[in-house]
Length: 168
Image (cartoon, rainbow, N blue to C red):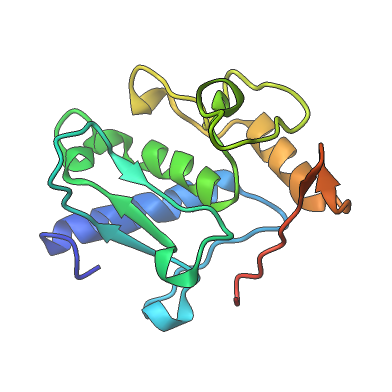
């Protein structure tokens, strides 16, 4: 929380992130707030990027090294245009933390192979929308993610499954 410019922004981000975690409401995966970094699987930080891009936040995939397990929220997410959508933005980023790729990954991110789990979900929180307020975790996001976590095979469409423990 020390990375945020003000205590108010840190608290707003924390409350928004906690709501995003509740919105996922997954059975096999639960998010719990830890107050110290050493006890946490990942952290949420305010990140000032020097580039002038349109990024609101970024996350990591579960199999990345521990030091890279950071959800970064950028100053643009706190602007008038996007501030009220912070919960929605964090819902999308938590999808990445859970191991989900963008719904369009197979078409637009082919440089990094992915698998479409069951079928395409045009309403998924893992899509891009005209405005982040349109992003929301839908019941189908939860059903399909739970099915993925319940899957007991060692591979999906030829890709190995890498199970990551939150204590790793």
